[in-house]
Image 1 (cartoon, helix red, strand yellow):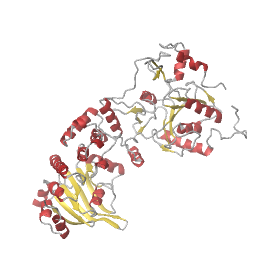
Image 2 (tube, one colour):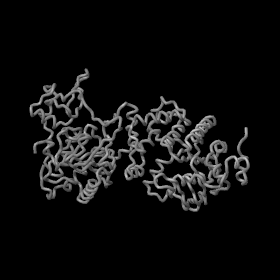
Image 3 (spheres, one colour):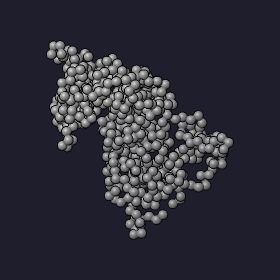
Image 4 (cartoon, one colour):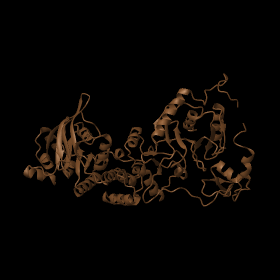
Amino acid sequence: MNAIPQVMAGGAIQAAPLLRVEGLTKSYGHVVGCRDVSFEIRPGEVLGIVGESGSGKTTVLNCISGRLPPSSGRIEFDTSRFGLSDIYGLSEPDRRRMQREEWGFVHQNPRDGLRMRASGGANVAEPLMNLGNRHYGKMRQATIEWLERVELDTRRIDDKPRHFSGGMQQRIQVARNLIHGPRLVFMDEPTGGLDVSVQARLLDLLRELVRDLGLAVIIVTHDMAVARLMADRLMVMKGGHVVETGLTDQVLDDPQHPYSQLLVSSVLQI
Amino acid sequence: MSSGSNKPERYYNYAYLDEQTKRMIRRAILKALAIPGYQVPFGSREMPVPYGWGTGGIQLTAAIIGPSDVYKCIDQGADDTTNAVSIRRFFAQVADVAVTEDTGEATIIQTRHRIPEKPLKEGQVLVFQVPQPEPLRGLEPRETETRAMHAYEEYGLQYVSLYESVAAYGRIASTVGYPTMIEERYLMSPSPIPKFDNPKMGDNEAILLFGAGREKRIYAVPPYTRVRSLDFEDYPFETQTWEENCALCGAEGSYLDEVILDDAGERMFVCSDSHFCAERRAAGHVGSMADHALAHLEDDQPAVEPA
């Protein structure tokens, strides 16, 4: 919760934006994916994107993570090599390098984010090799440290991902996406396919890691509990539009838009 | 074997392939030589042997061979294996070339699995038969992605296979098709030659051509090109070594095959390069089992038929 109070207190922007999205529109033929989405995220900030299925959350995430060119609008990222620049204006090798070095992407299904043929340890170490690390011993050590951080049994470092449970696979994916020290991590329903108790532990872990590392995170979820626990700020989407934005507690405790009210009230209470 | 390619009874065009196809392959070869290690796509043809039996190498040879060439063909280093004998006979028939077992005498050497022990010279061409030209394929199944990785020099992924090997065996245990960097630019799979032969590719005087028929790719290492085998800083590249010398010719430091002699654990290690071994024995070198019955079999049956 570092960046938000600063902005709110003086109105003066103290940290330069890490990612700036302006008028992002994506249509699939005549079907609208998302329309006129604009927001900024600063270093260390966690932004949640919530909304029902088909509301355009994933379209926004894919566009801003450089995986799906938008129909119109600008997506600017504060790259370490070129400064704040339009990610689709960069050449393809530069964009791929930026994605590799400065971003992480945690998929809902670990099978999409892991190399299932390589061992868990190799999966975690791969980003280091992509950055040019050529020392086996150092990479092995870093991998073991990260497996400990995500609370996995380090003796199982050389097991294939398919021999791990769903929750463990997701932990491997988290370690793989954080080991190279990214500045911005995208998460697409990171706790989606997991049972509730595993979900809670993974969320706890993610929250700790994000706070410790001061990461900026954009997390897409339809689960209000995940949003409440993880996000500093929320963006509520419906039908491709952003209908409400604000601090997480503000949006969840005092929703203004009728759809946000519906979304909050539809959470099951036990 | 009758010569005379203009006789009406000749059933095939010279060197089997039609002239347009040979031109197409030569263009691909020139491009491959211009960009060392880059995989050039080409229109691979149906050959009179199945894919996997060396169709890529045969097409390369057919495109570059002429009547004045001297042709040698080896399989696992040996001149007298079935595949090598058949392919050699094929070119003797369709290209009217002289054939030989002598590495030094040959102008075109087609090979699978080995680079001859005797250093190659300028003017020689070594043609490799390649089953899988893409070194990254085992880790990245998408061709679009591997092409982008080659284009942008993103070769971190290849180290994942080395990492796995060290994690499992405590050393880089892969022995064939060991990935190499060509002129510090393109990552290249040297076809299934043992890593023992990798150092021979660097700064070689001969032209090295690689053909993958099924995968429709041609690539090349031109003469005097830098070839580096990938490794880790703390696990450097090393080649295989043997405790024994060749049992027939006593050679040290040549690539040895293990031959099982009976079901009682009896075995011998012999040079895989049959011509290298024969030449040494003819020069009077004697190994520990030189008088073994197996050593004399091939003397009676020369692999190259007298013309």
